Image 1: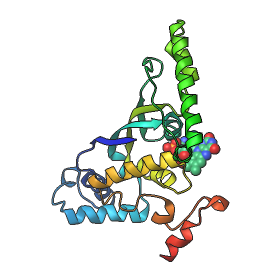
Image 2 (image 1 turned 90 degrees about the vertical axis):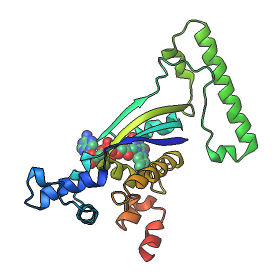
Image 3 (image 1 turned 90 degrees about the horizontal axis):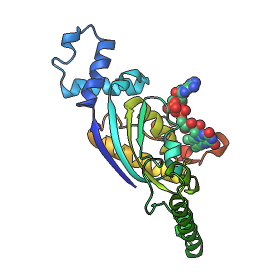
Image 4 (image 1 turned 45 degrees about the horizontal axis):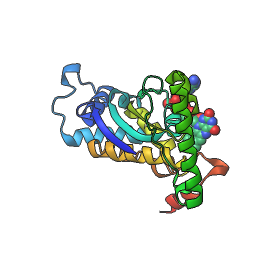
Length: 226
Ligand SMILES: Cc1cc2nc3c(=O)[nH]c(=O)nc-3n(C[C@H](O)[C@H](O)[C@H](O)COP(=O)(O)OP(=O)(O)OC[C@H]3O[C@@H](n4cnc5c(N)ncnc54)[C@H](O)[C@@H]3O)c2cc1C
């Protein structure tokens, strides 16, 4: 899996803080960025996070290039509808010469299962090629490609949506691949906007609350104790 932060709104924390400043002070539009010291920016960002006032975070976008995730993972990712935009490599227009795939660690760890898994991928590749050779268009031949097939996409999300995404997908209960993706994305954005994402992550860490009910991993109790 490769996760690269391609672009982001310039000065993300300053912009979010400026939007908050408008809400909480009598500053005029042309004064919003005046005398805006790093300390004031930090104070506004921390205030927003502590209040749960999330809408000012919608002004800032982050764009990622993501490669080498499975279609199983990308399908979960694109379920995040709000404040998110996706451009995914097409299996309709791009023919898979030798499709790459992701092997789940629990399969890779057992040689006999890994061999069966690999053979299944080879068989699917053969059928795919036979279909193409018989004149079936790629948009139909792709029906034999598996959930394991690798994909790549460009994803843009605003900060509010990223927070929500990290709450759900950095959680121990999330499926391993999308959790790895979410953790990699969180590491990227923290480098650029450490304050904005200081407390982003699973709700057991950010709020000391677990929404998983009976399915909880039990970590929340440990976090609270810590
Ligand atoms: C552990 C886990 C297990 C899952 N298991 C399944 C599963 O078995 N089957 C399955 O189908 N999905 C499953 N999902 C996916 C889940 O149902 C969501 O589709 C996905 O997490 C995206 O979350 P979201 O809808 O909150 O995000 P977004 O689409 O980004 O929405 C953000 C928020 O906007 C609001 N919102 C968005 N759309 C609407 C709307 N139409 N009406 C009202 N409010 C709206 C909601 O408050 C929502 O939380 C699972 C997710 C997780 C984390």
